[in-house]
Length: 319
Ligand SMILES: N[C@@H](CCC(=O)N[C@@H](CS)C(=O)NCC(=O)O)C(=O)O
Image (cartoon, rainbow, N blue to C red; front, side, top):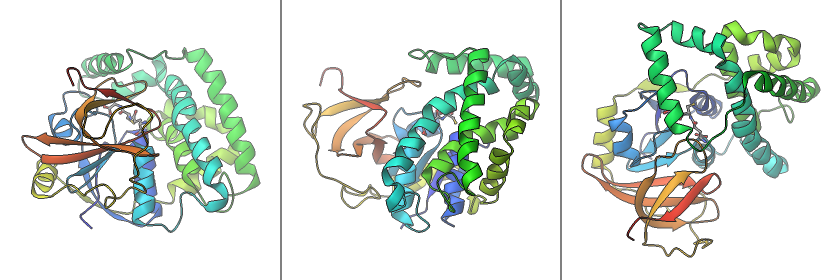
């Protein structure tokens, strides 16, 4: 199999989720550090428009969204399992809650004025960095309502108490080993602890959560080799995308919920936050994912994959 190339940046919570899954599965991977804000020309050469972090590249195949990347990594290395059979349903449902409701409460808490001052105060030109970041995320949030800091704080405290009830019962949230729910829950709390220590006192009220976080951190990131963005594009240009059914996804049977035939020109956009579409030819629309084929002047023929849940499929303008 070609190398696993993770495109990410150090302070990205969803990237920390995937770095730990790579560590849990003891996988070797290549690390391309991408910008946290636009413009991201090397990212868009590979994804065709999607600009969120992280994404996983395997040759000329790009897997967008950490939920889909977890499925891919489970396919690559089944043991230890992210979705143990007895937790198959609940672990996915819980992970989805953690990646959305918990994440947004935690981030609104983390980036309240005191947290934002700390995060951006460390840059070379703090006010410029903060301004550019705020403008970038405002554009991404055009279809999105943010929690106010006080509301976010109450919600985050409640969620931490609920997570503590689970962590008090066993080492990990659902038993003696971590599953996808642990990785999805951990990354937002990791951001508080590791990136915004000035606000990390909120974790002190739930020592079981802090102890579980130590177990999660000890998993580590696996064997990582730094890699260059330009080299990642060269890898894509030299590779052929894998045909549906032979790529790293679990299914390929067509499931038509939109009345859009395979072979149509379409766009795929995140349901909320980050309106940048990826356009291409619909190659697969299965129970679990969409695959678009697109040609890029630098990266060549690419297959870009998205999870079905959380993404909007539309016919492209004029198609
Ligand atoms: N549902 C996506 C969410 C990814 C996401 O929102 N990532 C944040 C960083 S942790 C992001 O993309 N921020 C904007 C950026 O990096 O350009 C996933 O699970 O991968």
